[in-house]
Image 1 (cartoon, helix red, strand yellow):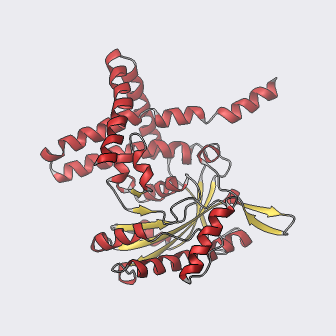
Image 2 (image 1 turned 120 degrees about the vertical axis):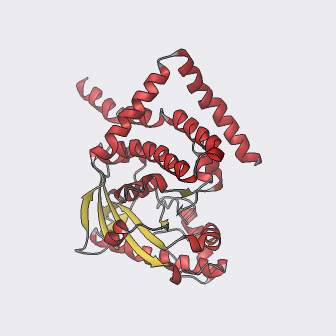
Length: 339
């Protein structure tokens, strides 16, 4: 009976963090909409500051559970020192293998104190996610060019991706999907002068490297999902950062952007091969550091929890909360669909 209780606890202990993280979403969403409503009468710097504060506040709650509570650590290689010391507008591109990837971007952003300024370019369908789909649609800075997650089990997706590369006459990737160039081309073509640099980020999770007796070598397995990661099943992450000057990045032709982007992923493929063989992207160069300090995340988590509980403690607060949850989501979806 005791063992059964322990097993149930281990399998369900992610529920409380999930509730604490998601519960403030209607309040965050309402705050964003109110801020947008007031935008015409607010000074631009005031609007930008409040916008960053709201988004950063929510993301710090996410990081409280996905970095502090689970003991996450990142082994950095590449141009990470220059990355963390820079204060510039930049475009970030990364490989994609799990829903945790976007949280890793937050882990990088909090080291620069830029958590409120990180934005994502998602697949079109993600615009319809309740609460934050609209917010993602409005901002485009972080791109996962593969378009979907790389899963070693989904061989049909991998084969299809490899055939596309073959038809283009490009080298076939073994550990990544062939990147899609459309989103990257649009971002570069329209915002090229806005960016100072492109940061090419490659992510690997310790748990994806497993020994195979049949092949007598380490092979790649599926990356941990959010629940497994929050429970601390794969707290160690490997991140390689490469800084690319904008003068070396094409932006006028989608074909040129596609070929350049594929060359970036050819490099990622070699890094992933090194990781599978040695456990590191670059042998002997990794620096393992914690993601964030408790003081950077705990106060925000407590604040969001207290505000949510206070809202739910009164009839009007509950009504406003539920209205924002259901009516706000419906209106947001309809607006995005027909705008």
